[in-house]
Image (cartoon, rainbow, N blue to C red; front, side, top):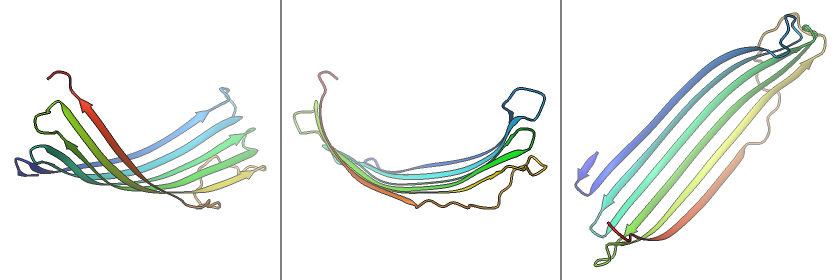
Length: 173
């Protein structure tokens, strides 16, 4: 959206969805000695807003960012002709937010020089739950199961503030 010749708002949106299923015969023989079955789904969304402006000697950008991701991965492995099954499911969530800004200053009479200062604050949360189970007697079937998680590690929280300063000199136009 263009508010004037010197001020605009830019929106950058992303969405991705993945659904995949694969079966692998890992031993390479005609018997069911070592096989793997996996079902994977992922959904991601991101949104960034940028306020971009200019006031003669100053160019600037201010922005906000949001990202979220949710993944479910179901997996079963079969060993020794269905006498041993190992289940390893994962449930992941990731969320990220940021606020940022940068100002570029070009001094009057020194158009080859640009001084820049910027900052970015970011916070991120990650969580993962697992379902892990091994069955030594087998189940009689080779199929995915989704009983929900039986292992929940602590959620991870990260945050960071990054500062930037630079000086650039253009030797020629």
